[in-house]
Image 1 (cartoon, one colour):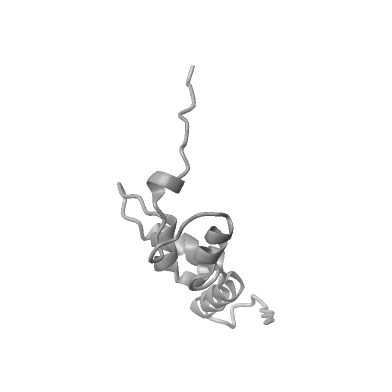
Image 2 (cartoon, rainbow, N blue to C red):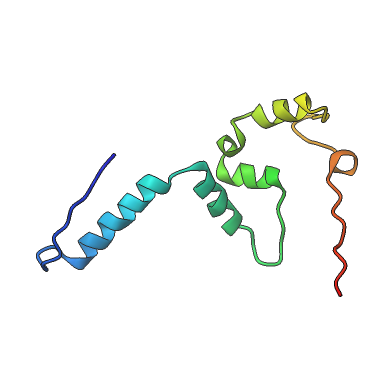
Length: 100
């Protein structure tokens, strides 16, 4: 763990303080969650992506490492063929909520 203590007396340039803050932020937020959010932000406006595509953008570690997700799915009885799942068979069906 790193800790910066800065006395804000004008002796340290503002850009240097901003750099240290950004570096500190990156150190504490370099997590799978951050990488997933960063991947989601890459989806162009007006488009959608599957979890698999997001995992590919974020790096497969985000979902437990290469093959880990497939193993978990298979343990739940989901057939995985060549790293893919038949969504017409195993995909979740969302019901539209009635609006009043």
